[in-house]
View (cartoon, rainbow, N blue to C red):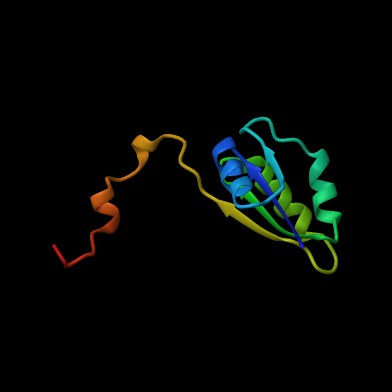
Length: 100
């Protein structure tokens, strides 16, 4: 089973470091259709991981998978944050409600 990762350079690099070889760096606004058909028809492809910032490509993939007969790959949409200033402070991430 193959895994394809599509997204920004940071997302793709992380999966490459984990051993995923079939990756593609795509920036919002530069999505292309030619590979969607190939991915959807590939019987070896089991998982497509895609950056949520690629809204147009996510929509096109969902539509293509909707009409595929038989088994189709799982589509995992991961949200990414480009600007680390948008992250909550680390103390807020780990604070449990009610524990002060």
